[in-house]
Length: 57
Image 1 (cartoon, rainbow, N blue to C red):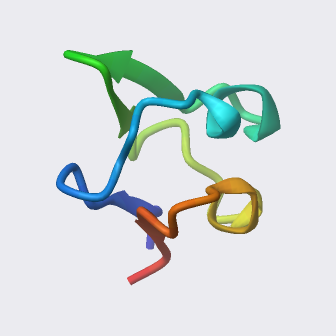
Image 2: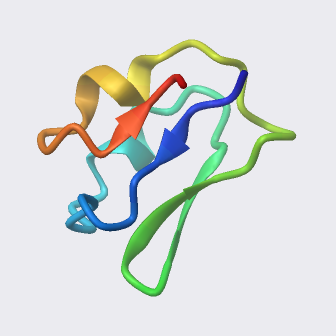
């Protein structure tokens, strides 16, 4: 299951962008968005997010 972003928590810091090994994360309207087609379910973005806006649920 691909990671999901809670847009209400996301601050747009872009920490997850550089962390993602599959380049599945982009920014839209100042918030992180994960492409489920590219996401490899590694969870690196979950660990990188300083505000816990990303989960693997």
